Image (cartoon, rainbow, N blue to C red; front, side, top):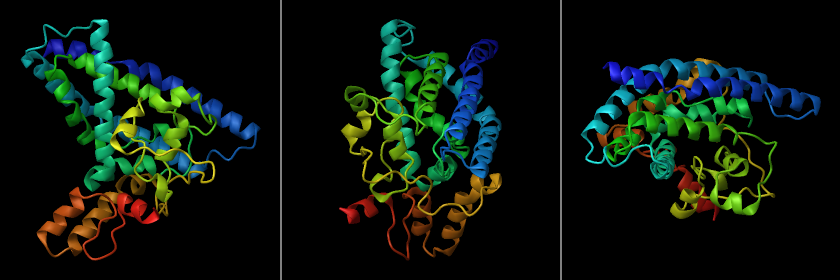
Length: 298
């Protein structure tokens, strides 16, 4: 246990990143006000900072439990003496971690119970650096499960958590309207502010697209990519925005909606579908899942 605790204490990148994030938000806010840019909404921003606080608390136990499990899975791995901290191991881990993030993030949008833990990130009606801090709270419970294969492949727990933090740092800077487009070769391979604005949009053509962390190639390869169109600016938020930005409502509203839907379904298979089908599915109404709405648009 002492060895686990010592390694866990070394996972401290987020403590270095947080002051940078807060400074970036402050500079963005000052810039927007001086240039009269409509980038922020007071209640929206306050809710975003509350979600950040909730995440800090909600992540304490799941994160340590995941680190503990990762440590022992790595000890069990037949590759633990092959995969160390060589440069090629870090490069390989970068790719595997990024693909894992894509899978987790896509699942958060396509499984309603997961969506309930992620939706508070998407309920922001503005796109700014405060929105980047408005992380999914409930998703802390299940997100680490997606990374379980990595320590079995020989990557130690600290390596995995370090790469997750690096990915988080990269993604923070995607939450902005101040950067329009990057050079085409970069936009083709990497996630960008333009690609991520699409991800946060409620426009039908943009729904459930661009789940990438760092590399947008996963979306291009797996059919979830959409380009930001100049003739259709992203409209941020949900397809039906929240009536209140009260922190607890932002946090819990989708769980409450699921409970209501489960209660009104008579069949057990329909009750289960409300948990595992994508948001928008209904047993007694129109199918308003993202893929259905996009097909109707085409």
